Image (cartoon, rainbow, N blue to C red; front, side):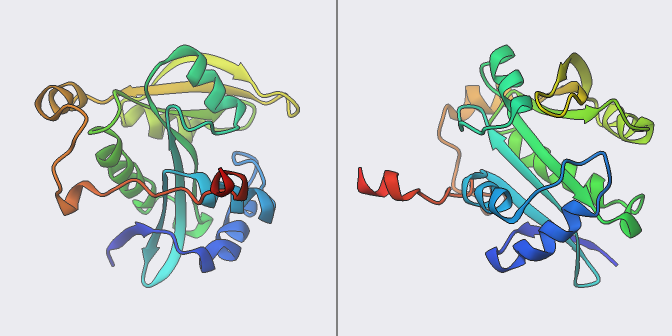
Length: 197
């Protein structure tokens, strides 16, 4: 059966929380409040379905979003423009079946017309050789390492050049054509304080 990647729906957050927290040590656990903040602020939050069942999700933020992750802040201190993959989770029973590749093809398609770099990290403390190999096969390279405050987890900081970005920027400037295949950034939910301003 084919894999469908689509925007998340708010009513799916409980299932996403369960999926995240069952993912194992290579993914930081979440609580419901933190997941809600990610949902409300992420520029990119998509799920994958196979056989009509949710089998994973990917959350991402563009540069300048103010995302509060220390790994995101590391990239922000080293690069002026990038798209950051905050987390990608695939259900354990579906790993190795192409879901991760479908997500990365989708997020790259989204990012390459908007940012010159795609950025993410891979934890080094766990047996993550398959994850590092997966990212290497997609053209990511390590540009540094970062120890996450509080957890002490060391992460390999990875980037991939978005080869299409320079041509898109030169041809279209900051205004992309109105084409359905380009997708649009999610509009973050405004906080009460922002609404009052």
